[in-house]
Image 1 (cartoon, rainbow, N blue to C red):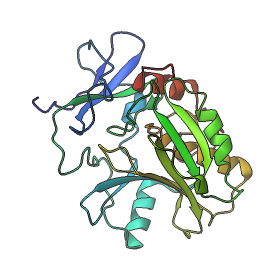
Image 2 (tube, rainbow, N blue to C red):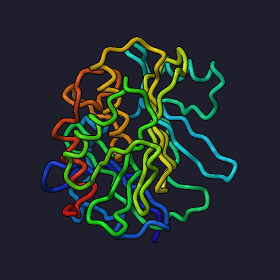
Image 3 (cartoon, helix red, strand yellow):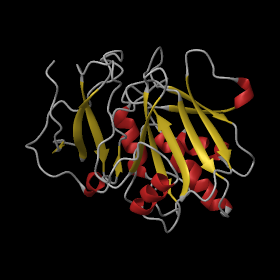
Length: 277
């Protein structure tokens, strides 16, 4: 199939915007990467939710085996994305993308043979080219393996994300291991230093993981702030990008809400439409 051009369009029904068409790995099946839209209206600017994501702090890296990963760094309170990029570069971090620069959407060895709609709904937006396969289930099964101290409420965050329709989230202590045939996200904490970021999530595009979340112990944070940051990073690990509303824990830079908002849940239902495990 000819590579699809990136577009901006709005679905004719449901208020759901397709903020871009990108391509996925040929290794992921059509059923696992179903395009949600069957009809598109004339192309026009997408909602504000899509416009505010060009300032996300992305860092790319390449492993020894050639696998390319993308990390979203979420800035500490009061730190702008530009300040965080500058701090990362001065700290010796390589692969920091400029503002507005798009991260890779596939692995170098993957063919671009399947167009996948990158969706938004209201104030929520999908993290493009980061979707879990259904495998043998009607909902993707995602286990969060907790390596953190009791200061980070991973179990509580998993509980609120498991309220979503379309994808199932489970909590598990890391020593229990990843269940066979399921997807697993490893959640770590550590004293990463005065880095200007509170949390980050790393996922290789066009793959089924591994996915890792890192939570920074080096800042004095309230219990509610830790709850919001944990909710935020786990949302990235479920395929969501940033949300532009203060009512969502996925709002970048403003750590207010303790949970997702209705648009986050509604978007997950559209990214993963075959609910009913």
